[in-house]
Length: 350
Image (cartoon, rainbow, N blue to C red; front, side, top):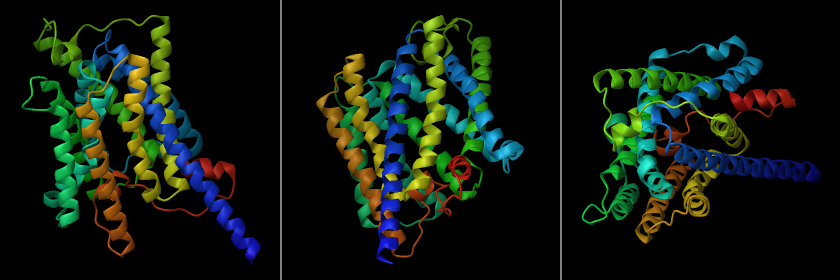
């Protein structure tokens, strides 16, 4: 009996380590992808990069989905929901990457990471949830962190700093819509149709923009979105391939993480993006984050982590509020242990 218990604890510890390692690897992939994106944005417009990244990512996503899930992987139970999610996601990432063209990655990422705070705030009118004093204070501290970063009364204020917040708003609303509709699509199916949406909307938006605005302004958001598409050369094609594969690998690693360990353990490690972004931005792009940015990052991280902590306590108490962790991570229901490596891979991508 003791040996059996020891074996169970060892296996549980191993899977916990695997889950934490997977989420850390996913976060690093996403940081490197954004650094590559920031470098390419100096040459290519946002919508061209979104199209190429999404189109190139469709190939491995479709192959993985077909190999492990068959034709069912491409059957959307709620196509209108995928459309709404695609539109909101397209607007979100368009605004995020326009901001990334003009702002340091640490500052841009910190403002985007207000999305868990916004989900908690939006859950009141959209889901009818009541917020306690603890989460109200966490929301207030989080938004104080935003003000510290953007400094609206300072000479260094940039209107581009409002774009990551718009991105966070769109992302938060899309997550709440998904939770409210009780989506049960597999992770790969959602990612596949997200890529289809991004590729389609990038082409459509570029065409409409060129039709109504034949002369693109020399600078500003419209230039970042609508400047002429450029044919990539050899090394840029390689960077685009890495960009697409990082998205595929990142999504699969996230799925692996949440299948290997409880969401309450994994979710806080997502905030390590805010640690890696300023470090790698400094060494690879020579971006030195301002002291106000670092202070704001600390406040936003603390706010988001505390909201997750309070909700995990509420869940342990037998309640299940449909916000923050449950909204951000809609497909994290525990599953029985896989019987074989092939079945484990199939569970990871579902």
